[in-house]
Amino acid sequence: MLDLDPSGRRNVWARVTQAVEQFTEDLDTLPVAPSSSPDEVRAALSSVDFAAPMAPEEALDLVVSGLRTHQVHTGHPNYFGLFNPAVSTMSVAADTLVAAFNPQLAAWKHAPFAVEAEELVTREIGIRLGYDRDAAAGSFTSGGAEANHTALLMAMTRAFPEFVEHGVRALPGQPTIYASSESHHSFVKAARFSGLGDRAVRHVPVDETYRLDPKALEAQITPDRKNGEYPFLIVATLGTTGAGILDPVGAIASVGARNSMWVHADAAWAGAAALLPEMREHFEGLERSDSITFDAHKWLSVPMAAGMFLTKHRDLMERAFAVDAGYMPVDDNQRVVEPHRVSIQWTHRFIGLKLFLSLLVAGWDGYETMIRNMIQLGRVLDRRLGEQGWNVVNQTPLPVSCFQDGRSSEGTSSDHMRAIVAGVEASGLAWISFMNLGGSYPAARACITNFRNSEGSIERLLEVLEQVRSAR
Ligand SMILES: *Cc1c(COP(=O)(O)O)cnc(C)c1O
Image (cartoon, rainbow, N blue to C red; front, top):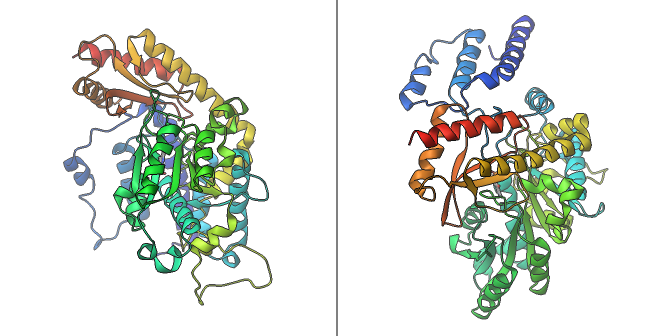
């Protein structure tokens, strides 16, 4: 029942690849975002009855039709959304192979090829981002949030060795974390789950371009320490989620060094830009960070969920995460890293294959060309928005534009900009999001991290924006 016979299996695989290819070819004719109501979606599921098993073909058709109809298509050429990727062909092949071969990467001996392939990719990316070949280490994670949580635990382990055995109760005072007011909210979650509490995260003021201000940072750390708190971690965000702001990681690393604090670079989406020589100036000092978050499932265009935690402190990973378990297979004869001893995860899926296979086929050159093109398209988007009377309010070399309506007296209001965004979404012709830059600039937001975005799709977006504006 669970394993079909060979001809049944062949039929299923054929139907699946057919559905995948058809979806990919039809993508630009589908609505970018559905207007599915809960009733409609539940109706699509109403024929489900686990007491009356279906034929495989029928079951597959039910799911393919549900997914085609009821989801935002992040790979659509007119999707300008939140870094959710269009997926590379090789990465889809990779995830398929992973499901079928199902390697268990918790222990090296169970899946040596997969474990070594993941190690190779994390090391190579770490080196490309600036770490020394001998030092670069890391692990694949479910995403940026888990990578940020990993960084927090590594920083805790270094600052408070007693934390590993005795937990936060053994600490002499409140440990504190510093990140800009524009940083990602996953640090608040990580602080909560680590027993530090939400308030351990101190939001540092930003300068007039929304970059973390290193002077304000130091001015916050010093009194906190005097008050008996224990500052231990600084986060530099390299590409904020909302507006693509790049914190000055070099200056932040200096503050970290002066205060003996861990410096973590959250480069979840924009880290990919650091692969380009001409963009390196914006990441100056990244090599001085203790760790980096880098999401393959954003700009590197592989399916969710694939994040990376990168560090130059290999030994500390083991100190932070190793728990002995007699039942785990070990290979005594070889010097290998046991994945379950160096990460939050235990069972570990072959997350890295989608990046490994994509990189094997596209090469660094292929990725660099793609990212370079999108950065240029981002400039086109900025310019064309300006020409159409939309005021771009964020300054960044990265391809994300936050804009207000320069042709309406309401153009800087939250209500107006939310209505513009909702109108675009409802059209089904394009997808952008809403954000509030610095809490005071309500704006529509479009980013170009989808390799199907083109000058044509930018023009399509501008047409839709114009229609929505003039209909108000
Ligand atoms: C997306 C993002 C995260 C969270 O990553 P997930 O992969 O969604 O868990 C963290 N930091 C930044 C800057 C991000 O853009």
